[in-house]
Image (cartoon, rainbow, N blue to C red; front, side):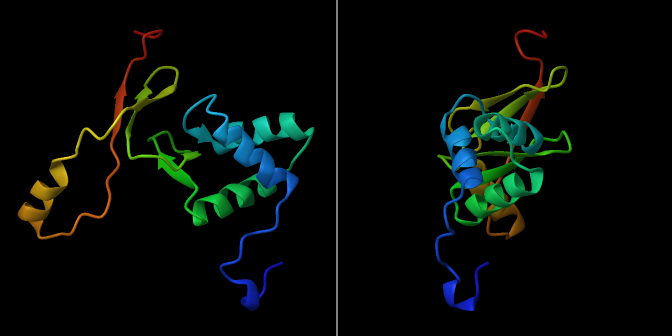
Amino acid sequence: MYGPSTLGAVPRPSPVSDAVWGVLSAHTRHAWPLDELHQAVRQRLGGADYSSVFRAVAALEDRGLVDRVELGDGKSHYELHEDHHEHVRCQVCGCVAEVPGCVLADVPGAVEASTGFQVLAHRLVFSGLCPACA
């Protein structure tokens, strides 16, 4: 356990956190739901409890290495922190694809001008049918 003197310190390595990092950095899929990430880590290690995987993902998110993505399906999804991009999710099978780049690059300025808000971030999820379901 970390005490006040170690705040900001890098967490100790663990097999579960190493496996979570390994699964996410393998780039075999995009935007992992936590339950499927847990299954992949269990396969790598031969076992891992759900709460350990959750804590490992939360620690990676706290360090800015992993992003949580909400795709409108009621689950949190996780992916490596990379350049900003949007997502598209199939309404039938739920598969997710990355939309390269930011399709809203010019929009934050217009939002700021019309609302007075300072836009710090945005997330956009397109919904549709993947090629297999179309």
